[in-house]
Amino acid sequence: MPAIPPIPKTMRAAVTRGAGDVRIEEVPVPPYEPGLVLVKVAACGVCGTDIHILGGHMAPTWPPHYPFIQGHEWCGTVAAVGSACKTALKPGDRVIMEPTIGCGLCQNCRQGSYHLCLEAGKKGGGYKLLGHTADGAFSEYGVAPPTHLHKMPDRMTWEEAVITNQVVIALHALDRGRVEPADRVAILGPGLLGLSVLQLARAFGASRTYVTGRGYRLAIAQELGADVVIDVTKEDPVKVIMEDTGGRGADLVVECAGPPEAMKQALALARRGGRVVLEGINGGKEVPFPTDRIVLDEIALIGGRGSPNCYPRAIQLIMDGHIHTAKMLTHRFPLADFREAIRMFKAREDGVMRVMIEP
Image 1 (tube, one colour):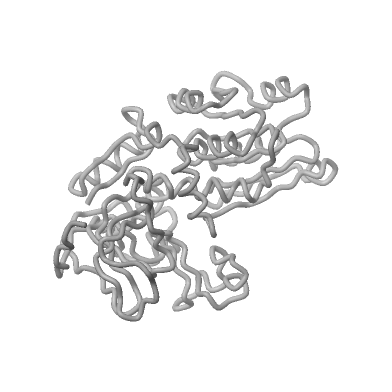
Image 2 (cartoon, rainbow, N blue to C red):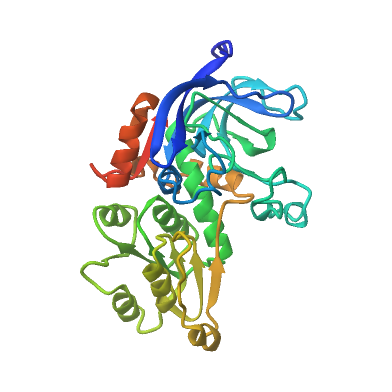
């Protein structure tokens, strides 16, 4: 194991100082004593949520204050362990950070639903969402409780570690939708989440998969095994899927896009007695639903967020070869080029899927 370098007093970070205002600055290394683990960040993925947070679209909830360090899809090497930590982690271990930290005391946390912590939104309540409500790791160092750092297998790459942070969300979505072997699964949105849902649905025995969307990402979905890809600019997904299923519809629909029209369409794609999982965030827009159909056809309309208790399973699924990360993580940038990374990701240039920042 290589020697652990001494911990500096300062580090470089991409600091968000206001809506659309991000700067590379020298800031103090975050304190980790007594109960946190300090990690030398190897990589942090840029997520669509980061774009919304940077644009100020979700303030003052995400972030609750400025200046703020974003970044919630990070991994790295343990640099130091707080003296009060009860953990087997030690300096030199490679870890993936899980960003949702519950208070640990409320009813939801005690039942394992720490992503739905009842203290969320309460100042000083103990709930944190790293990179959203508390500093993340578009920076050289990050901190997290030892309970939220998952040790990486020796053969796992940093690229696979970054992608894990979307695979866990896809896994929770399929848990919520109770995916079953032989299900026909429709996926709305061929972004990283949608592609993760696609690959996991196939791994879990889906008999037929459909991916709807637009642009170059549909070709990637096809390469990753989608049975039918539907370009929404050229075809009506409802018509295509209903014809392909003999008028029955999909057993499970997972909406990964966010626009209100996609959410309404997800319901139209489900069979009688089917399940619809909504994962997309639309910025608070109201979405009218045909409630009579939900009632009379017994459609299960399910919300999904986060990734509780999913990291160990997701890591194993990746190590078993069910997720092809090479087609999902397409670009790497040093921290100094953070603004260019954000611009490219937002513009969807050069076939970009996921961008990885390497501090």
